[in-house]
Amino acid sequence: MMDIASQRALILHEQGRYEEAERELRQSLSTDADNAWAHAMLAMCLSQRSQLKEATAEAQRAVGLAPSIPFPHYVLAKVFADRDRDAEARESIKQALALDPYNPTFYAMLSRIELSDRHWQPALDAAENGLAIDADHIGCVNLRAMALVHLGRKEEAAAAISGTLARDPHNAVSHANQGWTLLHQGLHKPALEHFREALRIDPNSEWARQGMVEALKARHLAYRLMLRYFLFMSRLTGRAQWGIVIVAYIGFRLIGAAAAQSPLIGAIALPLLVAYIAFAYLTYIATPLSNLLLCLSKFGRMALSREQRTAALCVGAMLGGAAACAIYGLVTRNTLSLFAAVGFLGVAPPLASIFKCPKGWPRWVMAAYTAALVIIGVIALILIPNKDADATNCIQAFLLGVVLQGWVVNALISVRIRR
Image 1 (spheres, one colour):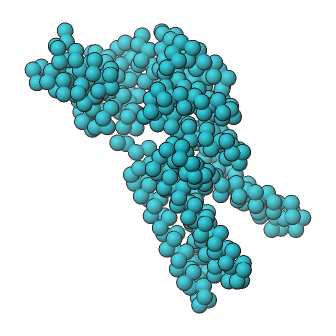
Image 2 (cartoon, helix red, strand yellow; image 1 turned 180 degrees about the vertical axis):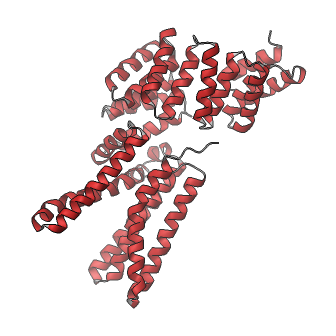
Image 3 (cartoon, one colour; image 1 turned 90 degrees about the vertical axis):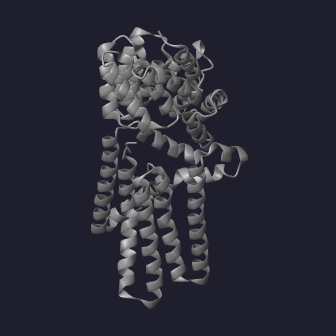
């Protein structure tokens, strides 16, 4: 039986009062240091408060004290998942399922882990296994809908979430999922309403806030078209995304080579090459540029995170600098000013991409890469008036860095930081 402190801790945890629950659990453990349940619950509270390393130690202690009880294995899986250590999380939840194969919450955790690894079909299978046990399990329903969306089965996802909302209209996660499902269907207006409702119920829902930002930006046709591309890419696995990038680049080089050999092919290919370059460029600046438009409204600024606002202002400054230099260069026929305009345009994508990278060394690497581009560009501008031979080398290095930044960004974004 649980002591009074443990009972209070359970109630406080259910109310989201994790710090108070932690105190009660520590009091319980002061009298019974080998209470596996209390260690597991303490790990849950610590994880909710982002004290992940200590949470891991408590969860592992719970498993060590009661290896034949499924709950500590489930808690350890949750803590590992919160730390983006999906391999360990998957192993722990499978241990829990081996001990209790009829717990839908365990299947929901497995589905969450598979979704995190972009394994859409295994995520769907896990959620449906949970629903076979409890057809009304909210977590499994929501995770099933997420998997269906990423598998391109948007209508099924919408139907599943609609049923959940009919049973529980005050579930923030369900409203957020319905909003994302509608966004994938190109229905940004009703999606916006569901995101608003999700944030009304849970103002701290990051999933709903991100959806709200995308729905607000989707009111503009240009971004709505880009959003379709972004959502399409989000449904692909990491390998498939890299495959598209590589095939597109190879196609670009082949068309360019063919155009160089034939004036006729060149006349036909030139618009395609320009369109490809413009589209590739927009994929990197469309999000911060549209965020910059949101910054113009009070509600839009509130919806954006601090990092999103910073990236938007940085890209806005680069594009503004490019426009000013281009206008001045064209009016005064100043070649150096035109080179500066190209430099501003070239720096904008990597600068915007810094905040796309995970916090930690990937973000620092991207910041260093961007700083190196800026330094090379400044050196080139200094050398150009003197017609120094090294100016050409600097210009070539700068342009190569601008081209390669797309590959660097894609590699860094795919990194999972184990916390």
